[in-house]
Image (cartoon, rainbow, N blue to C red; front, side, top):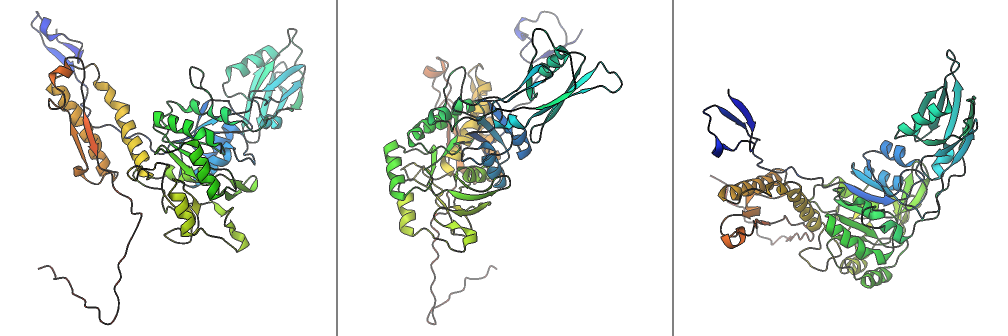
Length: 496
């Protein structure tokens, strides 16, 4: 009888029985879906949450539930996420780090020790209440609650039952340690205490270690982030390490100089670090004033403002002259509310930009608002030192990397060459439709016998050569004005 096969499951050369053989083929892939160009990989500190683990965050609610209340620290994850969301970002992978001296809050309730699931000061606000059932008096309910982290409830007739229910809950706020001789359940309430955050992590803890158990920055590996920042870290000895990681992962790393820096020192720090790469955007250490809804007016690194603005921009866009929100002043300009402001001279801006250092300031070319003033990275090459080069290059490379591997293992012939060309051309054509590339003349794809001679294909090699021309950024806008009573105006001929 007729049989249905999935494509590739039937060897048509070995058929001996006359019959109907239907092969189901997958739809042809004519283009790859673009990867995220706004996902931010963020490493920082918090009073709660797993350490050295990339946590998905898409809103402030997610952030508070994962890391607890925002803290008045330059390295705080919640503060960075808040700033970035306000400026357009909506997709994060956040990694909490510590110096290793942080401790978990604890408390004793009815003879059982309850320990906060994670270390940190947020655990000190967890309350645990054990109540007896009103109808079935042998049943008790343990409720753990926290203003930012939420509440959880567990019911049982013994401490063993309740502890088992807690252990099965991956979002539990506490861990219950029941003695070998379990005490009887008894109503009561306890607030956990003695949880600490430890000191500010060192540079090596922000950077972390690579390998099987990745920590710090390396916990962002394979998270498909487009942007990366170690929030509040200003150690210039880490800049080239961040650069190497960013180039490996296709992340545009955003670094910053120390708070209250001088231009001379900033230039010296960059030179000492040996940083010259399109993979890193270095912001001058003119930190910004931010009015936090939890901790009041704070001085924060410019990193989150820049990352947030990129998070809401298409990859062909530069940060240059894009208005930022939430800035209420800077160290150089002072607080806006003071009524006085000091601005950067062209000579100061030139000294920064010539050395691959960007800055946030007010005014911007478009008016009296806060914006990134240079739109540059740390590369000394004029062809790669604009924001758009790393962002768009990473976007295209990661998009290709996300789907073209499906062609590995296919027989090398003209059909394979055609399928590869069609997929790449379709992908680039979609970028034209999205406005990322200007038109179909902006790219070429070669994958045929001309760049795949038999001497190479016999060894299993297939090569596709892709060239893409990016759109330029208007950095130096010149308007030629000629005025006066003697000026002769020649009107263009009207169209027929």
